Length: 269
Image (cartoon, rainbow, N blue to C red; front, top):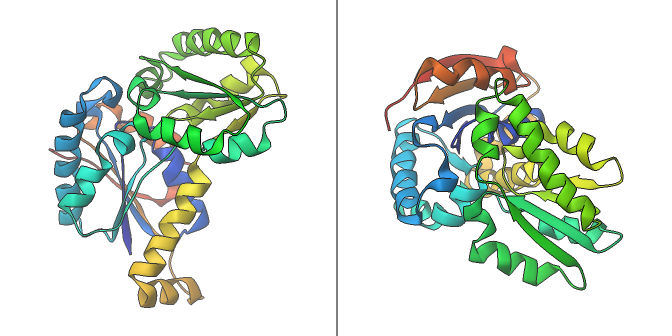
């Protein structure tokens, strides 16, 4: 069984790594839409049109489900994608619910791209779960794009994270929600800047669990056979980029199970 995973660059590999670790028998096709990056600077109509085209690509790849492993694409365009295909679609939402639950000082920061930070869906989630917590919604125009250019941009990334972290420390933030799938790739830099007292929450495990629930509901016989087979071979990972080979080495470097990579290719979207 094959699952498609999409992000504007390398960020969704945090989700892919979690899926492969939890369900290693699944084949995974990862599309880094580098040619259209950064998603955070695009309009909602542009993102909707792009995601519909990406859905058509994954349908041609014969996937059984699509994971939109990008907060920006989820809040801006996932409804348009769902309306264009019958495949199960799993999105990524900022993990604000667990953040509010564990915050001891009731001071939570949510860090995303500008599109995510300004989205009605994020504000709905915060309103639903915040209770008596104080919430700081923060964004960066450049951080996700700079992470895609790692390691050449390491110094710039550190500077951006330090500026954001100083603002959080001044507000006595004790829990940070990483509301962009790129950001967990440099979680260690947030830990260095904020200290171990600040809890950092990211969504990869929750997205993986939702994917498995949807697959079990949509393909019960196939999933039962996969999960209960003692001789099931491990799944393979295909890496695709809309930009070509330019960023393929960077993408490969973020894949934990690099031995599972079976193919790397350029795709035109």
